[in-house]
Image (cartoon, rainbow over all chains, first blue to last red; front, side):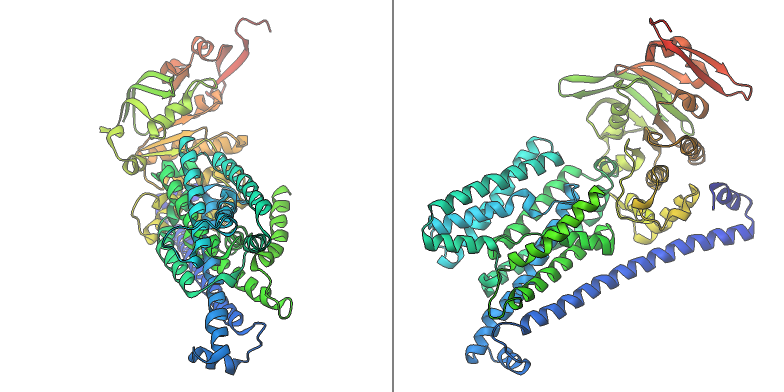
Length: 365
Length: 258
């Protein structure tokens, strides 16, 4: 219907035209409501797939426990070896995969929006590289923080360096007016700097420390335990509501910085708070399981295709896609080679690289 | 009515706008802001919109804009940036709803109804369920206008809304701007580069050069070869075609032989 037709319909009050216009308006509104329902249904399907994947991840493993043995061990945590396998290996690994995927997925989703770059992920900021350097200090130089248990030293130092790198990034970005290009370039500089430091640590490390450090940088769920899961869960529970609250403003930001500012969005504040959330989520994930590549990149792309860029759906979608990818990667890591658990970071990278190339080639085309 | 007194904008130590004072601009009229590149037109618009720090007095309908909070100011003055709305994977109806709800507590139902209405009023209701990354430049610019109008502003600030549009869409957008300005009785200020479109479709013009006001008034009242020579440095003739429409003919650069 042209504007003249609308004008005419509104102007002369012809009942036929008015009915047509009313039908049209109702049609758009109905279609939008249906779209919203469709997206909620898609999110529910994703959640269902995650539950299924969690169940598979819990059920499958090198020990080859049958369903009956699994249920028995689940109900009786002190039931010998099976109880240890279920309560100290299967469940923590499976749950940690979900939590890490959630944190990396949503951090990647927010980062691609605030940096306006479809190839951005938590690793663009150098957060994981900084975390790896922090871990290397604990593993190679045995730097200890007083009153902190031995088992928490590596994740704690990794976390401190990850957050420190994010703070440094924020200070530099603020000094340069939060320019998107500046943030990305400084992030890349941090990546190369910390990689060089980690290489130096590998060079001076003794044989055992070198093995530990290399294994840490591969990213593995085998470091998961209930304490770390609790910290990770609390971290996600605290940060995620702030992400979802910022969703409308982040959608406005996708329409352009000037446009968002003209709608009354405080873009600088939004970007600063978003970087803070990204830092905390990715630092938590990396510090507990090591370097996990591509989840933060791939998950937001899948969510965008499935759910569009209304961040009320896109952010939860990124988080759920991250959960699903990590959970499937965890299953693959345990079952690709019989009797061997491959570091999950290797699996995510193997899956992520073709996807990354597909994104780059499609952009180029 | 928009009143501007002694408007100054600095980028660092450089003064980009020099104490610009304009005669009041009336609601229901379209004012075209004209001048060469670098004359401060966009800065002037961004200063009024509150996107850059500006000194001076800006009053809209008796309200001092500089004393208002960012959210309230953005509701009164809708600014359409130079760039087209980006090719995001959002449906048109969603992109307009985002503009309606940003910085304001509006229910989803209300935003949906207002957005649908404004799309129909602009004649682009048929695009409502299309994705932004499927639209042409002209269609995206119409969506940009819908995003500005859905906020029900008292003033429209359009920064080069015709750039990147083909000839047909340039006139289509200008006609929509004129119609909505009158219908909604709002102050509309827009930056354009095409003198002939400005002369034919705007009510008033403001000529700027080097961050200073050169002339302001009704289109035919102030557009003269002397003013155009002063602003653009070109020799021009102003002619009225048999249909009564004004046309600027450019003969060359002042001081250079043809």
